[in-house]
Amino acid sequence: MTDNPLNFPTATIVAQTVPKNAFYKRAKPQRATALKDFLTTTFERITWLYKLHPDTLHIADGRQVHEIDVFLCTLKGTSYDERLLSEIDALLPRQTIYLIEQEGLFDLLMQHKAVSEQGTIKPSGRWERLSKVDLSAVPLRLEGYDMDALYAHLLGQLSQLGTLSEADYQRADELKRQAERLQKQCEALQKKKKQERQYNLRLEIGRTLKLRQAELAKLEKEIATIKNKIQ
Image: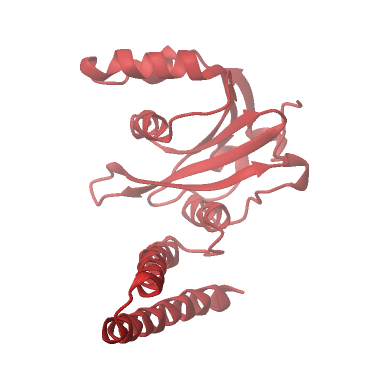
């Protein structure tokens, strides 16, 4: 692999191996051992690939985002625990993208991190991802007049929501999650209706199902409206 797998500007390239203790040493003592075991058993090596920063991109600093780091994590096996990766990510004081390499393909992940008025970074616990990506297809573009806009644009790409602002991302993300919950309810109601033998109960389930389907259609329309607004 080249030192520039995402074809980012040369000035952003770091391409340095990072000791794993640089991550778990930030953890509380009661979690350090578990995170150390996770990193050492899951990843062959971790490379700091890129530093996306006003100085390396020649764009304005953001009010909330000042640097985005990109790490390449080469797997030893075939899987990784996202919960533990999320815990590691929460220890890092900036927005971060992970490339998880496995057999020539890559998962690209970034956890949304909100910034408080006091400047504290708080992870959302939600990963946005592109799975099993061929990097030759150039999956990420760097666009934005400042670091805040760049971060929002990366969120829009990794979430596949296409949003260009963090506010639109958060709104579309919440609608998407509501839609996912409703979709599961609709599937459960369809299954229940199919299994129900009593005619009156089937009618009642059917009415509830139609209501949920109408709510789902409304949410999907709202999500499409946000996407169309940006296109």
